[in-house]
Length: 405
Image (cartoon, rainbow, N blue to C red; front, side, top):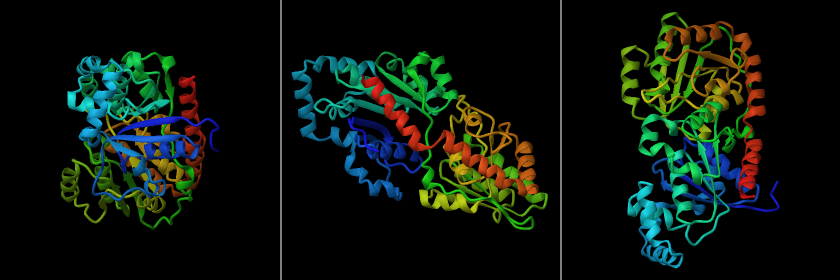
């Protein structure tokens, strides 16, 4: 359904399009489907990876501008100087750029697209991009500012770099948090609870097909994880749990989709444990390939742990995707993860870094395959009730209209 009064919305992101951030893509498409005018502003583009089909279908690259490409054009530079001079903001520009710890060149790139184009809402994904939005508002850009926090952007090292986002306190009209966990972290650094809206990242229900997971007891059990290959995702522990299952005589296959700096270590671990026949690192896959993997798997694992900065998984949207497909899930009992599954009903929570607990729950599910369909139906129902992207898009639009007034 298209809204009668469309909004002009600028969405500021880090990388676009990014295969690992389909939740951002889903939001943008949802806003467009409701008839709103959406322009995308990104720090950088991802090269060497196949674009999501919906990026092509909606011709989103034609809506996308890259800050540093804009800033390097002399026409934009001269236009920015002209606009700042006309609005008597040239001196304020340099003062504001310094306050927000933005170099003159970077600040120029950020300011260029917004001084002569008006938006009802600037919507920033992740706290560091919210700093850009706050800079623009202080520069005199007439708009409302909404910033969406995702959890990792409240970690100690990032918060230190951006001064705990102190710039956002006065300039942000509303912030959204993807979980109660993230909201509580925002409150701790000074945000007023009444200016925080819980807005979970949604799943396009129609894109993830439900199927009951069934197999004979003598057949192989396929385990699946979809995650960046970074240390805090805890893949070392799930691989060690897989090793124990193999030692116990269970016929399993463990597929891991994703890439990242921890890959080399995991390759070595798999070799050292003698699991080359059972554990596969499949690298980055596009969304269609991931959906096929959900359909072919029997159980899903997300063994994340608290990293050395104190960061924890704030939502773990792959858990909702897996449940939408009918997969029983096993995940760590940290951060916002417990909000995203029904413990003992659609899956199980275990202590972080606990190989024994992971092994026990996996063994239990392998031994009790008759409960998979019931758990899968419970997971699908849970996601439909709480993470349906269509409902969450309407909530986001209502937030925009509320702040716009």
